Length: 431
Image (tube, rainbow, N blue to C red; front, side, top):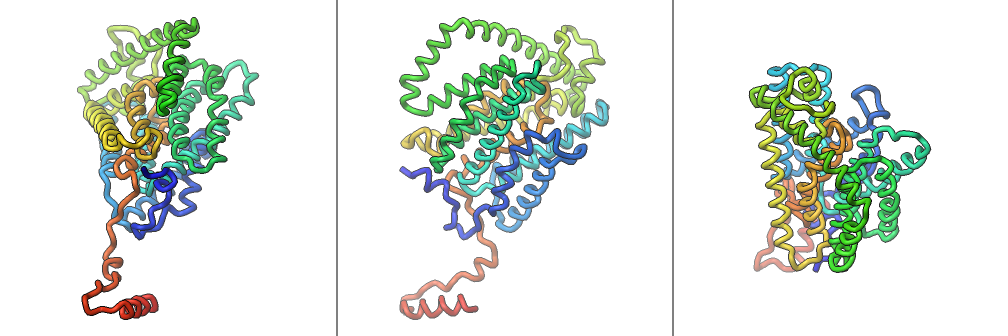
């Protein structure tokens, strides 16, 4: 069985440079910049978007230099192009508020630009671990900032904080399994300890429910967790009165989300299946009469509703097929690695990728909007890098350039002595 330390070392046998150190620092800082993107910047130009631009340019150079090709790369690039083209078509057809439409188109462009960049800059599981460490430092800083404001009567952006905590726990679970620094492993535990309390203070019923599910999945990765801890926790949770109250509130909340989904279908049909335009859901919902009520809620509260209603049925189908393909890809990886433990590098990423595919429709329901959030773009980019790792879990293979092929040493012949080989190699180094 291959150790995690061996898997997470940069690949040097492929004769390519590992990820540059400064790119690693960008990956570590990126989550923190995403969490404060609304405050650090001038208008649409934020530090997070500047960092995404730098990574995208670096990835473009890397793509040209190393001639690396992958299905994950072209899938994310194709989805990004489809979103932008469909957004322009639906904007011209339905004429939503232009400011909001351009804002959403720009946000989605940065989302897929980041995903493409992270896929291209992937080298090995070490790159996945570097980004997970960035999430670790970010969630520590976010929780410190949230706990400092405990005395406030209402938490600002509580739904965004709840969604961020759920996404963070998922990424921390991957980082915990890949981490080979024992000191940092304790930091993962320290980051997770206050999360349930902070989540409870946000008041997000759906966030609390998803956090419990994610915690159970994390425990189920280990054999002792599957046999003893998870069954015991399920029994305890089933007997608690708070669980029944939580499920009752969750049923009401999901009922409201179902009403919004029905409203989205009506709006999509009225737009001839082309969509009401980027950012146009709220405007269309307020200006059109529906056959039923949405209980005063005017935001989509679902990425699925945002995608289908605003960008059209074609993009919705592409995203659905992409999610199904990613799930099948993860399941296939798990089948091929049945002899390895679940917490090993090739399997842990596949497990949590599959969990994200299943839980993402509910996860995106926590916040009023999803596609325009920098933290959502970061999470989508992180999962895209996971897909790249599932594609080639032992590292990226690079096609050698023509210069490298031209400078290969001559193959030895039967008449060549070892001394002659040493002389030829010395002459090539001097030249």
